[in-house]
Length: 262
Image 1 (tube, rainbow, N blue to C red):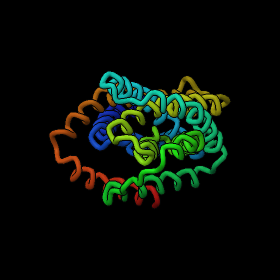
Image 2: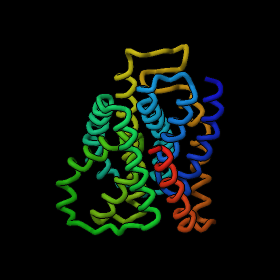
Image 3: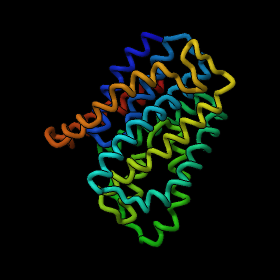
């Protein structure tokens, strides 16, 4: 437990900076890192991927709430859109956790590998968001919210890589889309983390840090540092060549995916 806690402190530093610098959720770093850390410990193989995903989502609740608070102070969040998406995001995230609990660990791992490849390639070759009709976006919000919440819950992410393109594609400015996405990540992370805690309740092991599928020492370590380093990453994005660094990070994600596939 102690080893994972201190390793998670470092992991939180890196995940927070990457999230702020590249505008993506820390789950792209946290999930594969936790999978590796859990493999070095006495974790049941069938729990490793679920525990990594659940713990990543629990940390996303804190970081996304802090990010949303900052964006709210700047007045960039479209709260009416958030309120329309929130119910389906909550339901989708809960449904995604239930689905993940019934998916084999290998399939769950391959789903995350596919997500890393998709995200990494998108950072190397940015995709253009094609605007849709506002009326179409309004009708699609409930379906899109459920799908985004479900996929985010299965992958252990806050959903920004899906929510931002969706909102921008519906005609919202990119600055408001990013801010609104940070607020949307809160119900996703809350519903998914709570669902994973309940689903794994029968396997609680408080003495060894297990709270359902959440692993508390890793959660505490990541949360303690990522909340402070995410704003640092956001500030660095204005000083460093973020576009070039994003391409480099795209290679890192693809390399990580290939390593997980071995």
